[in-house]
View 1 (cartoon, rainbow, N blue to C red):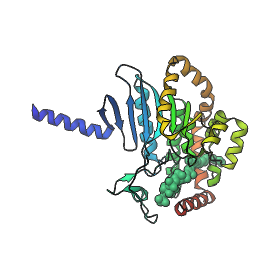
View 2: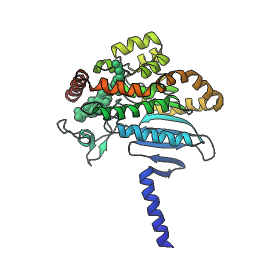
View 3: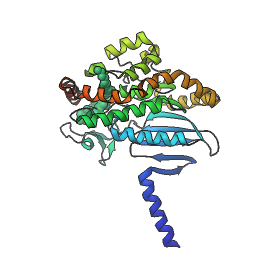
View 4: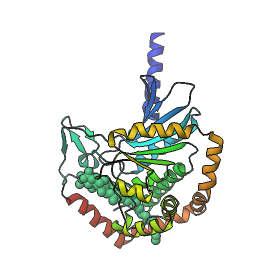
Amino acid sequence: MAMALRAASRVLLRAGSRLGRREAVDGARRFANKRVLVETEGAAGATRIAVMKFRNPPVNSLSLDFLTEFVISLEKLENDKSIRGVILTSDSLKRGNQTKVAATEKTEEKRATRDHGGRLQERPGIFSAGLDLLEMYGRNPAHYAEYWKAVQELWLRLYLSSLTLMSAINGASPAGGCLLAITCDYRIMADNPKYTIGLNESLLGIVAPFWLKDNYVNTIGHRAAERALQLGTLFPPAEALKVGVVDEVVPEDQVHSKTLSVMAKWLAIPDHSRQLTKTMMRKATADNLIKQREADIQNFASFISRDSIQKSLHMYLEKLKHKKG
Ligand SMILES: CCCCCCCC/C=C\C=C\CC(=O)SCCNC(=O)CCNC(=O)[C@H](O)C(C)(C)COP(=O)(O)OP(=O)(O)OC[C@H]1O[C@@H](n2cnc3c(N)ncnc32)[C@H](O)[C@@H]1OP(=O)(O)O
């Protein structure tokens, strides 16, 4: 009997590490893939809220692996009928004792910041650095196509999610980081002038895809989007609030509690009427991509493969590598 139990628990452990860990923590539940930690709050049987924490060191860039894990986690939450609201945030915390590994070391692991025990660490103050530039540089067209399909998938899942989605923006949020935020129903940003948010693609010599542009227009209006997209504006919190990229700016240590209290207000609205309203507002924008997904993938793959675009990305990566501070 004991042997059978041990064998069963080994099978469960193996399945657990394949599917993501699930454990009980102080009455709350959590599951984790390697790059996304999901914690749920609230009593069993009652409405619960999930917090999805990004932890893809060093800067929470949207790598293919991260996108895949994100979509799997979101799908799990969509299928859990007790969950009605999800908060997106970064697991990046201000930590002491960090050492930035030399920029000359090339691999992903070596690029990350590590603590003195050699463990990989998030760089602090980053919500998400956006799409992973290394997925778009120096690869082949088939890879670009696969990557773009995953980017589209994440956007569609978030934009059309029946859950109430909120972002607790606790760090820098350029380009794809801003994409994550503007798919949400509500955005709360930490009041730290070092953090900026916006679609800065034009500064990299690339162009935001039409569906992200549409999402931006729906969020801040046509004229503001037209200007911000051409200039690649990254807004500090006060300006982000003024233009409407975010809905609230609060002191950094209150971002989580404020998001929870706003979430409670949204969850007081009946789900069916809120969801139908959300669909009514968003369906046409999403359908616009759905009906031309394949063409959008091919456009991206050929655009990003151009020598001139690869050169721009190379220069941008070099600039990042050699920047001071
Ligand atoms: C004809 C029309 C067709 C249309 C087709 C559509 C085409 C659309 C194409 C693309 C759309 C892209 C959208 C994007 O999201 S592009 C990504 C934009 N992101 C950025 O510009 C952010 C760049 N990063 C930063 O500004 C900073 O790194 C910051 C996030 C503020 C953090 O700063 P800091 O804490 O000082 O950290 P470091 O700068 O030192 O960065 C640490 C290492 O991480 C690397 N890094 C940073 N960002 C990325 C990234 N997005 N992807 C991959 N790697 C990234 C950085 O190089 C450092 O590496 P190393 O340690 O080796 O120097």
